[in-house]
Image (tube, rainbow over all chains, first blue to last red; front, side, top):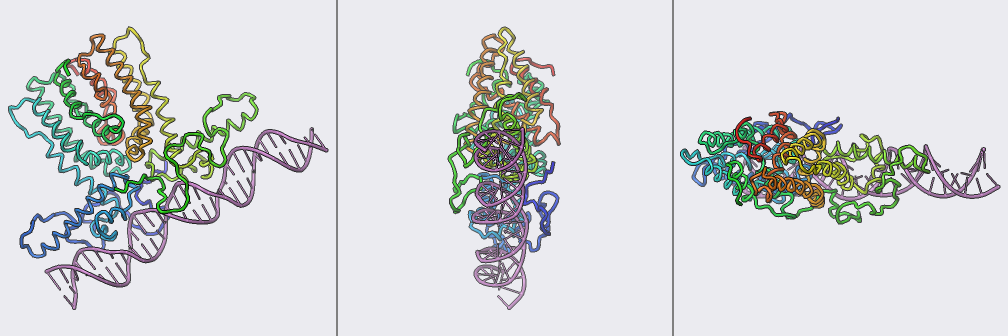
Length: 250
Length: 250
DNA sequence: CAATACTGACTGACCAGTCAGTCATTTTCA
DNA sequence: TGAAAATGACTGACTGGTCAGTCAGTATTG
């Protein structure tokens, strides 16, 4: 097994520096831009000195990320050309390298910024006193609205597609998205069991069973909806009926 | 949206002929080999004239497919180099082109030969009189043994990964694997409902709900098992408990 | 007028697909 | 039967296009 990760694979080539895994802002490339690392500096318009540049910088960065998102989603990691990303972002190719160390760094940042924020947003609003069923309904609704019906579904598929080839990406996604997501689901399940609404206690052990139809929905929409449309919301509701023991009916 | 499919993308290039979709043996490249199309000619050793050549030919073809499988699974479509496939198969690069029209043809053939045969094998043995539960158990067991625990799981993930970029592949997979698989599941469900073992009649409408945990298992094993092992068989059994209304217990 | 941001032509590696030539097997025919 | 001819299988150096990443130079800004 040769198993070389995809990058640009410096075969026998010259220097072409490499680094273990992700980008971890703080890399220290030759020149580093103001807004390059973190701190989006949320001064919208104010008068902060040098805020003008910072704002424009943040804007450019965002444009690159957005463009990258579309390109990567459409073609996958390897087949995406940074020239295209640059063109789509209305920027010269070199500019990308002012904001990101290399192609992979852009890729990871992209995934990060597309999925992480939504994980917290989708978690239950903790509404004590509400029925577990209601909380699950809300969960499903949010999931469909925020993921299945947005380009975030594409990003999720992208992670599934490329994850196996990017251990660092898979690990990150597991930690930041899967663990947190399943954790939230498990809490909901326990809540439902405690309230006597859910009788299948195994679900607390395998929250994946609750998430599975959502995964199915995301994948189906991406690959097969053209051949056989699937009403994700309805399917997920039906799944809730099963979890909550609502037999029969439609 | 430019949306060009990955291939080698003859950008503005010269002639470089292309064709609509798959390979469809019968393409008619310049020269065509004996065993190139179908009919493996199962004469093991016998005396059929010219069987020697045919046998060796089939062997080579198989070696190429096997090598391709490993490479594509490890790197994905675009990042796989045919030079590597050739080396792994113990063959010169040119030889690949004697058996397959191009990279994509090899890729498709690969997926085809890895998944299609197993679909029929995994379908229920129609054992009339048996409880639906028993049939489902058997189904799950076969699925785990034949897919989750084999490299076929990798192939399945490969389809999920590349399907979006290969409409022809997605369509083929939908027709030959998904439709047939879900069809078999739906039959089982109806059987279970008819026997009064399954009460959730929605399942007949959404057999995807039954398949979803299997999909989850395949994906989890590929991406996250390193971080959090998942006992697929146990999870799928737990899922059956839910479908069959076996409340509580573990 | 620095300093900083940006540009895009350029380099060097890379790789799908080709094809002229070599090797192996089978057929033909004396 | 044995040798030459014909057919088929295989090879790998080569071509032409591609693309990540660089950097000298230009623009913009404070």
